Length: 380
Ligand code: GMT
Image 1: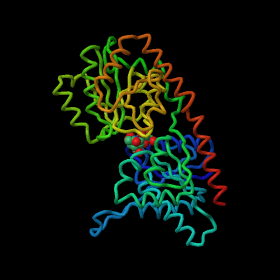
Image 2: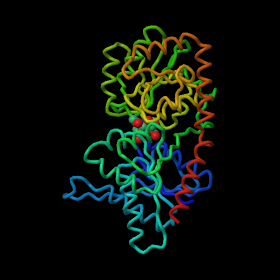
Image 3: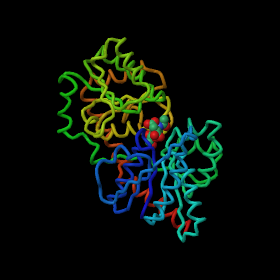
Image 4: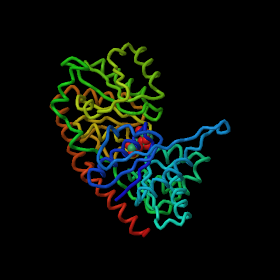
């Protein structure tokens, strides 16, 4: 198949999922065309079957708000014509599904013989935060209804979309996935623990875009409690608006030299493979891709019992869950686990087992292929 993929390229889990999906599909022989305003962050270097088309947004003095969504629609229609695309797959409803809808209409109106169906994957904040804003709700609902196929990354997100948007379309749940060959506890990478701490220190990690929904200061609060009992380091991978608040908190608590801000990282799998515990105390997660990536690397997640997280982490088996803001309980789970090396290793293995048996790309990508085929059959 020839598939156009659009996502937010620089930031957040939806862009990561979209890029990894494109890479996996390309490896399976599909022709993938990324259409976006900049090169997706995990798309490094030229790869067979992968093309990238940049969307140029002209800036005029009149445009206080340059119309990216229109430029995107134009580029989508152009690329579809030029490269004979079979369908478009947009990640994150706003504004991508609206642009795809326009592109589909443009092709139809141009008398082109080809149809351009589009599918929308809902990721989370496109529904739970942004989509529910009154100024976006009607158009988000409309573009979801107009999609030729809709998928959501968890049962939680599907149910919430149906309930809050009163959507009548069928929404297929296709879980997020991880490349289990790349995300693993490679002993070579694990040796790099010494880059971050001494041999008696445990390593906790957090990976996100540091937005308020991630509760980054809770990560520091939890680590502060753990660090009082267990020699340890905290690795913070990513960047974003709450970074300086977290930095200040670490300074106030006197633990800043044990909190390492690594910034945005390319080879995330190598960093995860040195850690013992992943902290994900989010206000909300529709899935929690970071927890899954950690689990694949035998890193036990301690997270909040919200959204789709319980569909990924089984409490007491492949990780621990607590209520939002309950930093004491999350710290206690970490302290208990880090005090018992045997249990720590066992849970890491169990986390890997869960990731491998339910969320490997080898399991999930065929579900996307089938989803596309059904859409193409229906719209031919
Ligand atoms: O929260 C983020 O990391 C960004 C956001 C996005 O859409 O870019 O993530 C959402 O999609 C991820 C990938 O499907 C999920 O793993 C996250 O749980 C989800 N975030 C929220 O629901 C807050």
